[in-house]
Length: 407
Image (tube, rainbow, N blue to C red):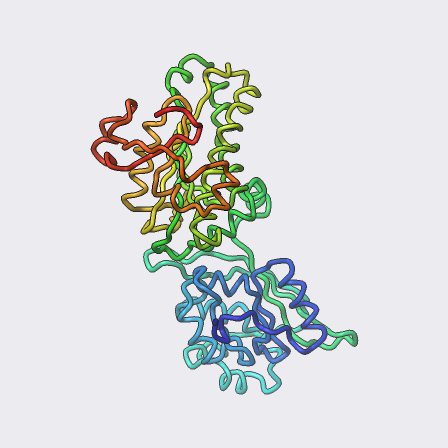
């Protein structure tokens, strides 16, 4: 069971602050809400999850001053956000003029309230209370070897029906403008973004593994005009991602005309469900590739995907974020074996390992049309299409062809 700090925070009691908190929560904003004395009364789950580095919900000092000792102590433990003394000082200088204006006892009282390292800054503040909104730049700490990230913030004063000031909402957003954010996210699938968060903390996770690649891609690329082949490849990757996401999987690397995907037992609900989802995605993609070929006017006989499906009991799964991309990755012997199985699946075959098939419970096998008692397996080393690397890395892995062809 999660502790108190791992639960969503309650909505503030004040009606006006409650209305603001609910709107910010429902819109999915990064936001804090403070009352008229700058005590933290609400923080959205979105900002708490980000401050924790996607490792739960970061704690905040509810009921304590935003720049008080307890809030500063907790923020220094966050993986992201104003988690250093320098960043806390920067934020205090930006928001301090409002804090000072809202403190009845003026500078003397504010010095007693804020954390000790901030007290020397109080004399630098000039109180402002006539503004309704301000825009400022907050700086959020990241990994130790990276520079702080600039995060735009909008401060909005909250007043009740009589016009009395009851608090302030601090609303943050990523640094790029909304046009850039929209371009990066509107083509994405929210289901996949949410699944990626489940592997933010890398770890060993039982999973079904799917490798797929275009068979005989080099001759096809030489035969088609470059622009046509590019369009075909783009449509193929989009179709592959859709098939994986619809089946509940996580998309891994895109290499050339290929795709890697993982179907986790923890997100699918069971090992059998994960194996079923992997097979379903492969079959859907096998059918979709022909539709992609038709749209791009590629002859049907020139389009086929190779599939290698395998089970990984100890696959280490997580995602890697760099300055240029974010992608799910997995390590383990079974991942390498899946790649070798795929390389043997020439002619558009779907080769699935015995380890994967035997994860299926009878109900899931029946839904897939697989008779578990009559599946014929062949060792990879005995396949006529076995590559040198396959014989070296996965010779004893037993596989079957889910297309029903002979091995």
